[in-house]
Figure (cartoon, each protein chain N blue to C red):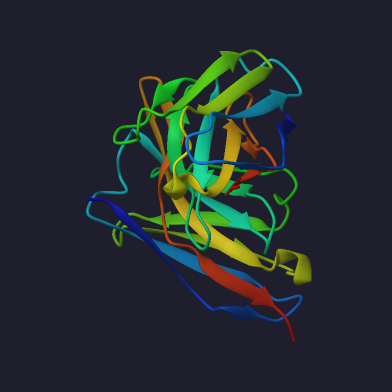
Length: 122
Length: 108
């Protein structure tokens, strides 16, 4: 079945750029029924949606993060990536990648990666 | 942005109890609401979509209802494996997708 796996550095210095990749296995990222997204969760806190991308490259971002976020897709590698610039300690969180399925009445994040902890510290 | 207010933020109940969580949207979102379960150290899991539809494979003791601005999530008979934090999420008027603050469910 479809699986998502996040990868990237677990420690990023303040003011630098956080970069993560999500690898999709067991299925194609190039499907008209899905968007691919990033969601984060600071320690002990709730979930915050960062942004999503379609396989064609069309993106939409959380307005609160839009100036610092870039999400891209590489269909040849079945991967999509997150870049978050000018990070601060407030960006310390578990970062999840997830599939958003739009089929019939279903419009939800139905498959998630296991998450990766990213700490911003010097 | 549409704000999602969940209550209570935590609750303690006995095995077999009926548990109810509410989620209120800051504006009408029709039935564009999902519910997720997150166990400690794990990713969220989709339980209910479109306010009242049970995701495939999810036990029938979980249910959802509501439309407009007021929504309810119910566990009809709480089981030990239901210990988790539950989140509502709206998908009307994107972006952004927004989540409620979460409800932590514990066993009394």
